[in-house]
Length: 268
Image (cartoon, rainbow, N blue to C red; front, top):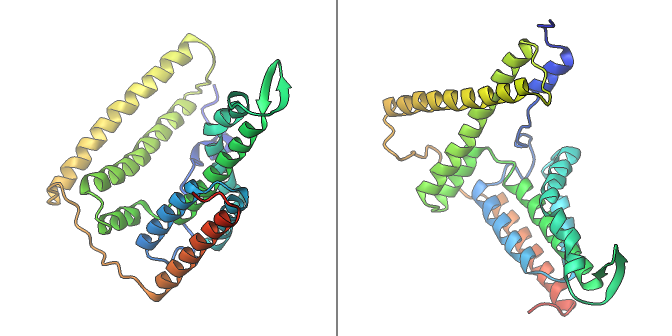
């Protein structure tokens, strides 16, 4: 039996997906509240757009923001494509379910031009919004995001739920990786057999047991530190001149988007 993990296996186990939060850029130096507000306004504006020139301009603005934040292009676009995977079936089916002028026929099912244009419109909107959110909000540490939401008067329950969810996802991921390493060390090789199904069941069971024990230890530690259901904010966020400049740029972008939309005669 091979009890020693190969270098490839160690690298595969140790390289779990990590959030894209690091880096130094003008975007990272902005006040988190300004970034959240800008992302929300941009998302609402893009969703209300209908003309392709305005949507293309919005997508270009998102790409420019990604470049300003110095995010890794390949990794960021791969994550965006993963998001597209959730809506790809809807986009593919739209041409066949939307009535209108027939563009082509596939296996006896006609596809309309109106459906194709609608699918392209939704795809541009979704990619522009998700890329802006990944750049402005996704590059924050979860603690900074929670503090910013609390300063923006978001209910404490929602902020606590978000912070604890992010924290415990990491805890569960760490426990899962440790269990997988232990299974690898015992020369476990997954397959389509009863032993594999039983081992995966044991893994999930142990994962739940360890997560429960870990949560109880964390709760006791928080109580020892005086936690009474409320997280105290230790940072005092202040808007600076760079945040004002950023707000002016975002405002100008939104005006430009609606101007292009109005110029194409599609603004309601």
